[in-house]
Each structure stands twice: as structure tokens, then as C-alpha cells.
Image 1 (tube, one colour):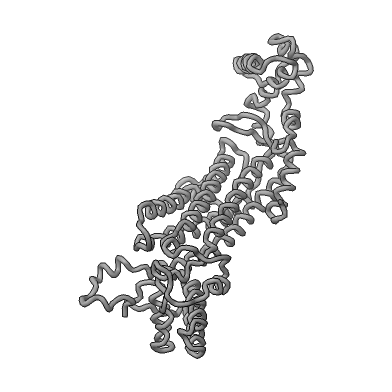
Image 2: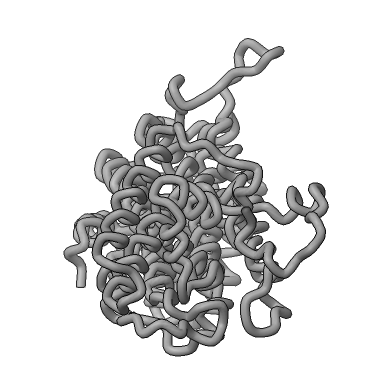
Length: 460
């Protein structure tokens, strides 16, 4: 029997019923719907709507329903439009007609808003734990290769030498911002809408503060119209998930480049790679490629939700049913992507010999030479121009900066003496960048120690 059938004399078109039904995806909310219904049952008992025996019978039956879902034996009926309908229908089957009293003073509008918030209050910490797991792998890999120097790039062109550890920790810091966004989304979800009714607030004298306490919320909504139509917390969660995927996609691209023959800096473990159906020699980075591809899917869910919300009048509208599939899919996609990247990075190895060879080329210490001239009093634009001429000289002769003699250097400027040659080594270039956040070995070690504290939650 429908929750809303009394007003209607005719039968609902079967096609329309199928189109409007959400049970195919919102059944996932069953633990939260049962928890929400149990809390509301106690609130109704406190308000005198239910007797103690009725409340006890309903809550006992709800545990039976929970067990049926947990064991995979819950049987849905064609009349089950959504998870709320299914739970209430089964509840009445178990205890009799008084089970229907749980709907007193409550709407599916405030109920589903509560269920969704409870879902996110579980999902956000679980995802944060997965992000932390990937951060730990990045920190471990940075420590393992703490002295390995690789080319740093801008515009995908060799720019300046950096430590591999510094590069890995850059991704760790990106993920730290994702943790902050997930925490923010959870904070936005941590407000109880139950008791708002359909839009105007419940007519039953329930203690909403006690309801919030029973369900684990920090506070209650202040405006019933806003409470039933608010999905900002869903948008915030989708934004956090999208940013996480954007960062995973960037990490994936880096891994793909590093593992290419052209870079040759890293090797994928066999357990986290696949082969070609035609070319026997191939080892493909399918995991990172799939993560990179799935980023568009999660970003699409964010855009879809923002589009749903942009023109909704107060209060609840059925458009809001579209808040679930994209969010559920995004949560699952991010969780799977984090696991794949954790496994891929954890088993990946780096080629020290190849890193050393790449780090000696590309004129990557040219900036150090310009800085040296500036330290001697030359204006930097002039130093920049002069070192550009030195680089052009090397390019025309097919040599590197480190191949230049003191005599060749001094031909460009009297300031480019024997001491200037010391600026051209990779190690000296790294050592000069010891500021906080720099790529000098001592700075990166400090950064790594700080990252460990951050992951453990000890950083202020």
C-alpha cells in the first residue's frame, strides 16, 4: 500500500512508478533509515504518541528488519517505492498496524535528509582513513628514496633538480587538503533535520535536542524549510571527492610518465600492471589510467548536483532524489581509486641510475648560475640574459653546463670565475634551497617528519 494513496482514485501508471522509484539505489541507506526510525520511535514514546510496549515492539522489529538486510534476505515488494516505504511496510508486517504510528509527525522529507547526513557522517571518516593510508605510502616511499635526485619540471620541460622525496611529499600535501575538505563536508552534515516534518516543522512535541543526541548529531537545524531542502552538505562532499580525484589523477599522470620508456624513472610491480592483448612486451599502467579516467565521472556528479540545486524553490522537491546515485558512486569510486593508488605506489620501484643520468642534463642549474651573478651585484635581468647566452653556447656545441671550463665561462663575464663552476653541480643546487618548503635534503627531511606528524594527527 502506498504511503500517499488516499487522495487518488485511479491507479498510478506502472511506467511512472518505475521512473519515480528510488528503491534500486536508496536501499543502501537501510542502516540509517532504521536508526532514524528507532530514534523517532523513542521520541514519539517520550511525547506520549506511543506506549512503552508499542515502542519496544517497534524497536525490536526494526532490529529484525536490520538483520534481514544484513543477511541479504530482505524481500522487497513492488509497492516499495523507496527505502522508507520498504522499512515501514515490513515493520507493519512484523508488529501489526500500530507499526504505522512511526510516521506520526514525520515526513519522508526530513527522514531522507537525516539518512543522507548519517551516511556522510560514516563515509567521510572512512574516506579520510583511506587518504591517510595513501599518505603513509607516499611518506614511506619518500623516506626510502630520500637522497634520490630527479629532474623537476615546468611546462613538462626540465627545469631544476629536486629530490624525488620532495615530489612525493607534494602529493601528500595535496591529499592533506582533501582531508580538510572531507572534514568540512562532515561538519556540514552534522546537523539534524529530523523534526522538520515535510516543511513547516513537526506538530508533535518531540525533544529534537535529545533526538540529535541519540543519532549522534552535534546540533539541530534552525529552519525547517531549509532543513528539508538543504543538500549543500552533499555538494560539499562531492566537491571534496572531486578534488581528491583531481589530485589522484595528477598523481596517476606522474606515475604514468615516470613508468614510460622515455622517462624510465620507475617500474610498476607486476601485481599492479596489465599487459597487451597483441604486444607481448607491454606492461601497462592501467590502474593509474583508470583513476585518471574516473576523475571525470566524479566531477560530473558534482556538476549534476549543482545543476539540480540551482533553481529549486523552497522547500522539498522531488528533484532532490537525484542527490543519491551520484554521491554513492563518487564515494565508491574514490574509495576504490585510493586503494589502487596505494597498492600501485607501495609496490613501485625507482631507478637510481636513470634518475642520475636525467638529472645531469637539461641545463637545470642555469638559475643557480644567474643567482650567483646576482649575488655579485649584477642586476638579475642582466644575469638572466647572460646565462641564457651561456646556455645557447652549450646547445650549439652539444655540451652541458657542467662541461664548461672556467676559461669558457669567464669569456661571458669577468664575474664568471672558478668559483662560479661550483654553482653548476646538482648537489650544490639542492643544498642552496634549504628554506622551509625547499628541496634541500635537510629541508625535505624536516618536511617528512612534519608530514608524519600530520598523518598521525599530531601536527597543530
